[in-house]
Image (spheres, rainbow, N blue to C red):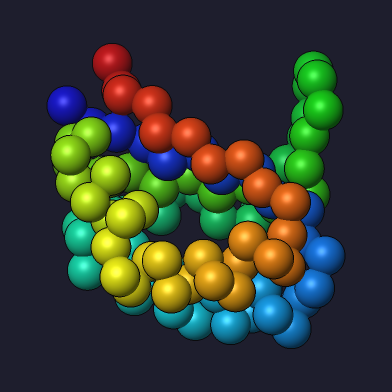
Length: 94
């Protein structure tokens, strides 16, 4: 069953976050992830929103978790987490 990563981000340090993005994109591709939404216009209809929103499709939950815990993505996070406020959630599709 397909799994979607939903990431909501407020970037606090654009230079450091750019380092995250350089590493994260290839890591997503290595684990078969497909970007469905990546930083386009977002209109918050309810609740508290963030400036940037990303949706990534993975084949299944196991692959998504393997990606997240991979050495490649953990390296990316070493730049991304300190440079932004984020929520990162995996959800199974229907």
